[in-house]
Length: 464
Image 1 (tube, helix red, strand yellow):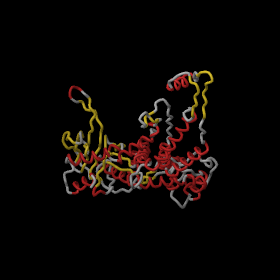
Image 2 (cartoon, one colour; image 1 turned 45 degrees about the vertical axis):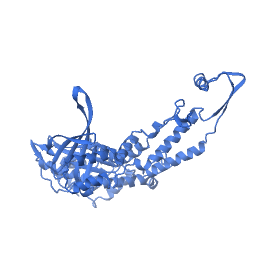
Image 3 (cartoon, rainbow, N blue to C red; image 1 turned 135 degrees about the vertical axis):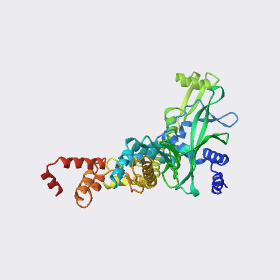
Image 4 (cartoon, rainbow, N blue to C red; image 1 turned 90 degrees about the vertical axis):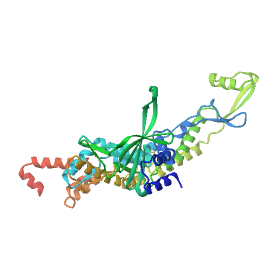
């Protein structure tokens, strides 16, 4: 039985969720587990801090063991494939403002106010977080008459689901690194664990595998001086896929292989380390001195009849380029992205361009489907907090967030199709699909203003 299974069994037996031993076991397993390591690896590769940066040359030492060879430079060429693939997906889905569909004009206006430019940018960042780490998290709360969202780093949040089903949260542990002023003014780094459950919020300090309570239990939030407990914990998951697997899981070996080959090729081209040196009648006894003179002065001293012959080892450029090209092709296929260096990319049009974007479109369709559950929870909390703040009762009011993918289309064809659909579709539907429309609500307001300024005769002609 794993630690997680043991913990969940204790929770199922109604052991107190605030029990320090249970919580310490959850935190300990998460901090040392593979899931969190993969999250950190995904973020590291997105920042182009790949494993090749730790590359070094090795040589056989006197005892026959491999030891680092500090005398030979080791090229460390990292390629930001993860960054390009992740940014493609986030921009493809969130590059254009998404549409809010709601028949209730008051709730639609509130939703439009909540999803301002800052929140829209935050959603694009959340998409990157989910692809890099398998899952992204938003925390939501009301403040000063507004509804706010905060992205929580996935490696700092531990969810515990009811009945081990990823639908409803039973408990959330938020890991917060803090600086603690200890005895004699010393500053210590400690880990604050904020535990959210159905009964409120309790802080702990996690140290040496143990949990120490800090203060008393608090309500989920305080509004107008009154503490409130929520039916749902105010944390919303956004998954990259059902398994919560990050993109780096599938493409890391290919990136490491590409980086290594390019770095080794750079060494071979820039140095003579790949060549065999034949030295005759060297005027010295120390080969280390010989290497230093060769590197510093580009010359060596030899006796009469002596010389230096360098027998270069051939660099198999053709096979190397073929291998790198195959690595790159596999990267974009498995990573489901668009390789802009593809020879047909610049000349493709119409159906061919859609074919090039097929893998990206397929992956983004999966992300959109996975994010739909998160959008539903956002709508739920917006309606809930609007009611608590006296902005209106929108319980059960249907609302939908529709992503407008930044797809490659012919604007002329799209406009012609909108015009041809006049009379068959509503004006709102046509505006939602028009390539020039950024905000449907703003465009409807402009049309209404223009009609109100027109003479009565013109209005009748327009209505006809």
